[in-house]
Length: 383
Image 1 (cartoon, rainbow, N blue to C red):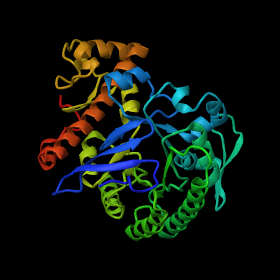
Image 2 (spheres, helix red, strand yellow):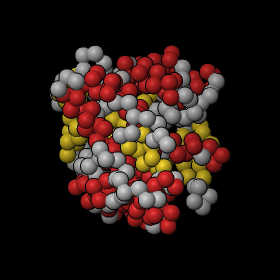
Image 3 (spheres, one colour):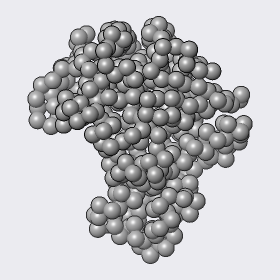
Image 4 (cartoon, rainbow, N blue to C red):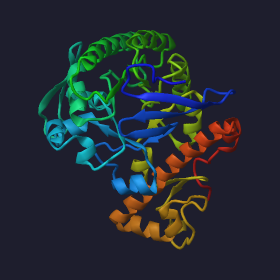
């Protein structure tokens, strides 16, 4: 199944499905190379995945796509500068695909600095207090200047809990923004290689999710995102809403769950038919001394690792685990050495990408249900 018969900036083909779940393995073809799905996208907020070079991502980790953030790049160094430098791919020396979010989540997470209207969002920079305005059209212009392969539509992301009335008004605004922004995108005269994904909202109310999906599907977009997850709800509710929303989306388009999740949650989202995910956890936790391993989380500052000569994860093949002991890594962390952030981030991102590769292989050989049963990492390595 493919979108190649459509006048599309992307081509998505599904090469295998799990008959017992909604999981599927595919290839998402972009102007900067193919992406094997399901895929986890390392987060490079400001044009860099913190602690890693593009060479690390390409050669050591095999990353095929990364995420960058419109809000942060808009404020610093500015999308016009990046465009003059030849676009974000050239600016950051990254030859593979890039997805940019619209900046909406950052604007709304800083809601004390923003004011929402039907026209868009008026906000103040968290850096210097300067006032700016994002509209459905302007975030398209910013992302076209960046030159990303996949762009995201401006949406309103609510924290949970939210009232039904507030969620309804927010969802309707998101639909209006999507219609305006998508028409603007279709009339663009540059960035013809770029695709634009609308975002399904509706908070944690199933009927609002259905209504939003029904309206946004009329846009016939190249792919669709599920937003408004991991905003204060329980993990169980997040999975429930993601599963419900994924079932409403076209079978032949990529589905992107935004901002999820923990390693043990990745198979759950894939089983719901999700093709793309991102999350700051592997990089953020790494900088704070937390390793994700096949046995659970390992918090390196604990005294029991002072003389531990084992690798962080004996089952891991990353450079960090092949080369360094827990004792050395603990020393680096306690000493505040930059190298610790590099090595920890490399391991955590490898761990996430390896899970995705193993899942894809399991789907392709018809063993995904068995993979799920065997994939039960502990939350914390026991004493």
